[in-house]
Amino acid sequence: MNKKELKEFCASLGLKCVGIAGVGPYDTLEKIIKHRLSNGHTTGMEEPILEKRINPKLTMENAKSIIVCAFPYYVEDDRDSNLSKYCRGKDYHIITKEFLQKICNYLEKSIKGFEYKIFVDNGPLVDRHLAQISGVGYFGINNNIITDEYGSYVFIGYIINNYEFYPDEPLPKTCINCGECVKYCPANALLGNYEMNPKRCISYLTQKKETLSDEEKESIRNNGKVFGCDVCQDVCPHNKNISKTEIEGFMKDLIYNLEYETISLMSNKEFKRTYGERAFSWRGKNLIKRNLEIVNDLEQS
Image (cartoon, rainbow, N blue to C red; front, side, top):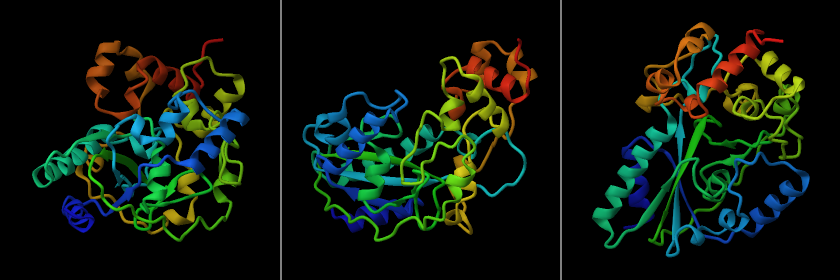
């Protein structure tokens, strides 16, 4: 089995953005993480043990390479929505893991003793770093990974495995540094030097369970989204004239708006039963209800 065969199989599944990352340790990333920690630019949602974020072999001892895939989710639609684009369809964790499992099933048939671990947004490694070093995409000032065909509207999944696929090289490209994302970021979370303060990011604030400050509530209210934020991607020139997704789960049964009257009358079980396969449901009904109250200015004094 070689890398070319692997990528051809991925392409047959409709996955065009696939690369191979080495297994580190990632010394450059370690410096970046320590810098973020010293500035307080973390949310607490990150893997708490730094060594696990930079050394894949602490997750899988016999790891020899990492297969990195980008999954496009952009669906062109300009209707008003109080949900970020990434969570209007079926939960991306479910969809992307199905694709990654198909890749692993294929490799198991071709590689004797093939072992692997699949992660989508739930692993210890920094998926955007993996996407960058594997040549899947390059960093934007808005801290998103940008791909040539799909812009930054992609999810990233990876497979740590015990087969030594030869690593790819990072792309010889960079963000055009236009500054539009910095200029229009609703809460001034982007610092303009490829760094950000994630605690100010509205996407994080809409998922934050702790008590929100008046300033944080105002940021959410002004943005109008009850989950997520799209501004830094919507204004990005790299996202103009991009290809739309062909992944069925991201194209069908889309939800564009959640209504306060509907959510507030639901029990927690009803909410989970109705929205359990949607990415916005993972923080629970009460958080969505809180955000709807903020956006609709329905908070009780």
